[in-house]
Length: 356
Image 1 (cartoon, rainbow, N blue to C red):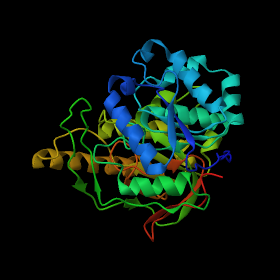
Image 2 (cartoon, rainbow, N blue to C red; image 1 turned 180 degrees about the vertical axis):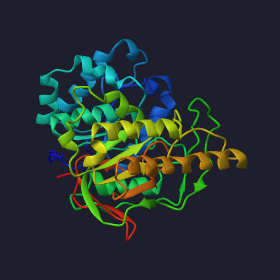
Image 3 (cartoon, rainbow, N blue to C red; image 1 turned 135 degrees about the vertical axis):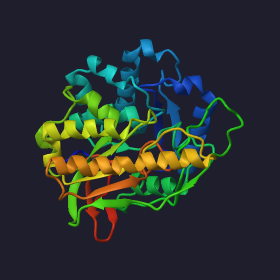
Image 4 (cartoon, helix red, strand yellow; image 1 turned 120 degrees about the vertical axis):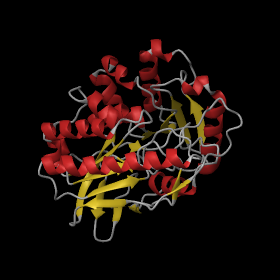
């Protein structure tokens, strides 16, 4: 994988732009947006400014306006970071409006770009432009939790975005939240937290190093064979990170995506796999629902092992149950930054600084 341009670090009082590049939830649930904005500003000491269309509710009919907001934020030298409000399923529609000029704007104005889920498409746009971006929580999910931004996320953000030293070993949470929050329910103050035993090292014995690439499973299938999909050689010496959305795809559907990556030759190129804890929606107060969800989750591990065996990749380390994706808390994964998986010590470490 080619080395990507790193953006400048965040500092106190810096300006951060919020954008809605997919769903319109920020406009539909303004209280949730304002809560996330307030927590992000107060926790990290920055100032948030909305792009012109960030809070609109009619963006389905105006994909060009979403792209305009993204470009406006990249071109503005006063804006040091771009934070997506939420994911969705619409970002891929921006591609039909993108020209070489848009990619030049991104490349010539590298800055911190943050988001997850459907934002995978925007991250691949940044990769095509040659800059590193950050798979991370967004304004309304992760940074906008009613229970506050969880400590593991706060510390990881500070270490990743505000610090120019190597990030080091990635933290592991002792508990997580999986239930979907209902943003129009004012009584939803605290969701149930479930204990967890940290990262699961389910395959591999040798320490490997590679540059991070990946995103949300559903987006990887959407982006396949589009102009922003990386060439096969760009998967050389990479560590693939992957997670599933709140749509709760089945383990079998997950294996179809893995087999597609195998058929394309991607699995032959990568050095290892990081898998985020699957998200979904269930009543965590009901023991039966929790047990059923956990049993389903274990089948994802089985599919990972099975497909890797099918493609002769029983040698690569695989780490699952990680804190990124559609559960809370979430850590940040910087695209293109050198990362190490050490199965002996059971650690995943980012060996470089992600910002300058």
